[in-house]
Length: 298
Image (tube, rainbow, N blue to C red; front, side, top):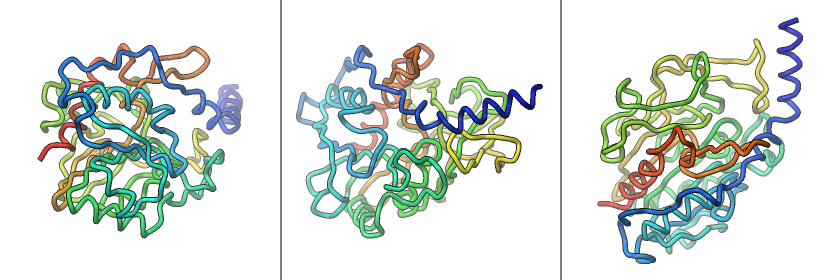
């Protein structure tokens, strides 16, 4: 009986996985204010959120709360829909890329998951960062790591195109007390942050880890998002990363393996709060501001 129930639930997820994920909308009632802005209103760095690569999170969509907090901190925020190039990046100081998808994966969260960016775009982005540009690159669970991989590889990062799950389930807390939240200017004043189902990655030697998978994690590598069974490939995740920084030439990069933690969403039919609006994540907004301010410094 238990096996029949498991198979039935798996079949339901096979059908409903992407549809369930789409049941996420921006929480317009969240607290989007900033008590002590880093910059005068509208006078801060020019921040662009990529929206030209089938991104699941965009400036006017699920990342609208992210954009509102950045604006409250003084950033000049806009969307970017053009391909990445020297010309399109010329008017940008800080680029945010969250959950891009190749065209074949739009509405089809199955393998293969090719990159969403051309080699020319990845090269242009790397040159822009080396010259002083700032990048926040975020890829959730499969299929998004596949879409983001060309940009990650340009800086020596490698995503697992799967789901990083805590062994035994439960909330995904990264906290100072167990060593999963590491010392860094970004984590100053932060004791704990929460993420909401994401990916894992490996970083180049020069990178500095921020969030580390500790205390029992499994990386599940399904052929279809949210479809897991006993035959799903998996490997141990302890020691892999959920967040890291890298200084590249004159520029800076932050790579993260989960997107919802940086915004405020309502999820599912019950409108569950997911992100910095969640009652269990009171320090997530401060973490977001620290990420943006570290990227903008120097």
